[in-house]
Picture 1: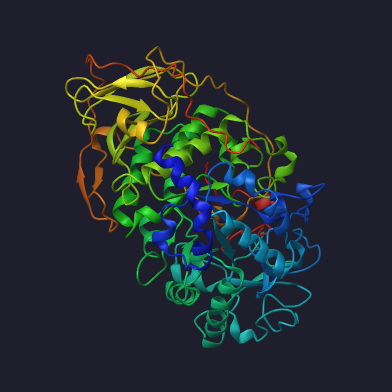
Picture 2 (picture 1 turned 60 degrees about the vertical axis):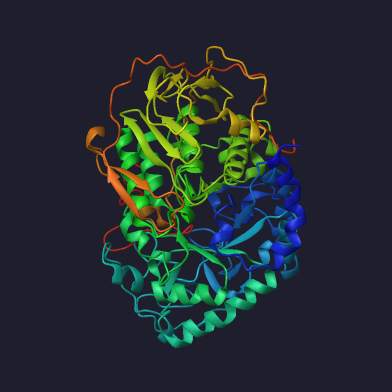
Length: 615
């Protein structure tokens, strides 16, 4: 039995330990996360997206589909907020998404009972998996039946945790880019507070801060929660989040939306929280694999992440979420999407997949059409290419995490040209391209760690190749496919591809381009802060960032990348036709002055795109 296979068999035996251990960032570093909206993941019936109504998904029905998630080798699940929210149908729909919090200390009965949530936690822990809960504590929601939003003269919803207007900031429009304003003014919808208002909590006041901090530890313990995703983290003070997460005693990762990696990084650290999601890397991927930009744009964000974050190895790496366009709606070329997925798993950090990516869902681009009922797509099929590719990537990452300092490293740019980029991450050489499914060509990559005349294997396709006498690897594309190269020895140690792989011309992945959905929708959430990435400069002026091996401090050195043209070396081009497949399908089975935010945060269709770029 291969060592990695043995590791997988031991995971359930660790469950009892995991369920009582307060998970910290070191525990989460090795994890990969599957994000879902409870109401839309499993167990519902008829679901009209346009109505923005509850569709029937629950915590119990999520349990019924854990085989499907674990089949992709995910070992953490992020669920939407559990909190009690506003009831009834509003101008912007119902609180099916969970972000219109009324009282975070109470549960939303639409998703189940306390016992149901405990059962989900226990079911995950019995599988060696973690539970992450989305928590929305920046604001409490109220309808116009309960408040005068303009004057905040009354807060008379009996269910609201805080009823005294003194516990909220005064109503004001956010001045974007003014960080004090972003933290103290209200996130509103459609340019007003009609029907539903999000009352910005004054978390700096002792009444609010002490109440939330005294509650959260018991909540974590009662429901066995292993991590929090903090909604609208940018709109909360770093000091409050630090104290709140210290009281919780578990890993916290925040949503600091916007393209400034440098600003997002200020939220991470000893006076902030454990981690944030890497919006910058998302923008880079969207621009390069979904927007036709050159690889210099992606390199810009890779370098920014490596040099800005105090610990880039725990940054959330993702391609889409409940507020953003599904990545498949950005491009109909599955080869481009595949490259983006490989990058999100292999750059470094904690990979996070939004439910439905594995089924190639391309609806949207925005809320409500990017919050589909998964049961309406392919009956949770496990035999599709993307489901199997994600499974393989999780297996690769898990195995490489047992090798040396892989987990405590991030990918560094080894070579770059307009359409291609090569990243070295410890023992793995990751090669990405935006040539597309019709893309072909050959590229010689020097300076690899493989050595001279070394046998190497691509873990994605089982292609085999050999470096030349100078240690350069020549890769050949036929369908714009990505590569994850390792030495043949490491591939064998992980049980990948078998010992019978033989060399022959690489056939590629044969992925035909498919049309994108043309539907439009209102947008949602922090995605309104997306701005156009900086125009890429020529590759020979882009800096290369190298992080000291094993360092989690973000210390780095800057040098110029190798921009030489493809060499005419005699190295063998990548070849395939392996008899052993690496794929395992698992178990078989702003409008002016105001942010148009919803979570649905209920935006008006007419204002949907005013603050959003082409991304």
